[in-house]
Image (tube, rainbow, N blue to C red):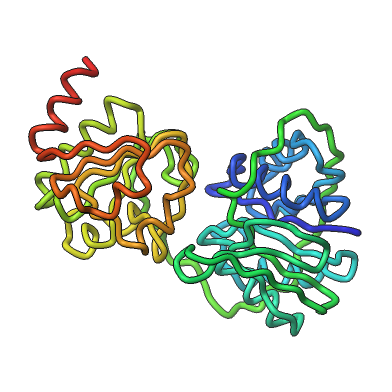
Length: 309
């Protein structure tokens, strides 16, 4: 069976972690073709060609795809769909924006946040904030699937697939790009970081969140936040980890002043090692933590930062 994977491309560059993990999932379904659609994406296509398991890379280098507008990319995927039984993408903001449009145009269902491939037509996905796993079987001739990449290991960069340039599809012109406002940061990207330091409502204020930032910088970590912290204005929305935020699975997740509501746990419980710091010894976060410290974060975090040198 033939599988088409939409590569995650940001600013013309391949998000290797997200794409390689999606390819890893797709390899269980059949021969994998990767589509790179962006402006000046030849470099991204060459990078995708090195992912093990990729048989071919299609490069649609056109200005209409340069800003990631969902409608033209969805049209491109639909124009290619005849040759593929499965269309996959990472369950990122881009993937979740594009794939439902593809499914609607093909008149099929979309399977979102898949964490396991059971067979060519059967998939597992979390429901109820990750407290249950749903097994879904579809009879659609085209399977449109977003992959929760935290459930898969990245395919290695040992491949050498050919790259084929393809023409752009028709642009439906339903929307237009105005501008992007991106906050520059030297920190790792949250969803692919190996270490994440997150703060919650217990941090108390936006000013106090500097403690979280200082510790993250010491560790070379990305910064996360609970929804309560974001809603309180302590942290920006793109730091939010949880059911309605980003899903992460780093090697080390440090939760500071986070009680551990199920909505937050749904976004980080697959982390390899979880460390929790909270002054409430009954906080639910301690039930999933590998290491827990019952302490006032305003004492514990500076002490931890000093111990790191």
